[in-house]
Image 1 (cartoon, rainbow, N blue to C red):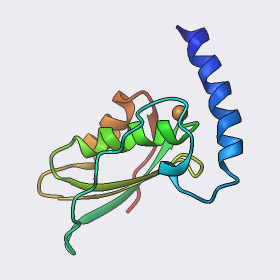
Image 2 (image 1 turned 90 degrees about the vertical axis):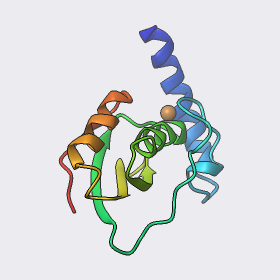
Image 3 (image 1 turned 180 degrees about the vertical axis):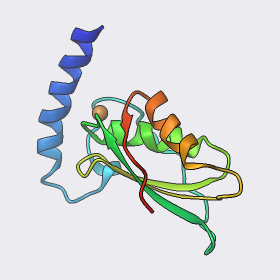
Image 4 (image 1 turned 180 degrees about the horizontal axis):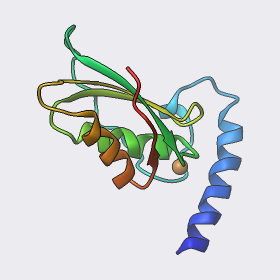
Length: 119
Ligand SMILES: [Cu+2]
C-alpha cells in the first residue's frame, strides 16, 4: 500500500514536471493521483470570509483537487482555490456557518497536513 503510494508519487512528480510546460492551472495538468474532477465553485458573495491555509503533502493537480473537493463538501464553503506548487488553499466561506477549524480538519482528513490559517 505504502509502496504503491510512493510509486504513484514519483510518477506524479515526473508528470508534474512535464505539465509545467503548459501554464494551465490545476485542471490542465495530467493527474496522477487524487480526484480527477473538481467540484464546481459557487458564487462568492462580497461579504464572504476569506482565509489562506498552508497545505503540506500535495504533489500534483490531483492532490489539489482532492483538497478542493474536501473543502467544497463543507456546507458554507463557496469556493476553494488550491495550489499544489505553492502548497496553499485559499477559501471563501460563510463565517456564520463555517469555522476555520472545520476547514483545517477537512484538509487533514483528506490525507494532507494543514498549517495555521491566515486571513
Ligand atoms: Cu497528487
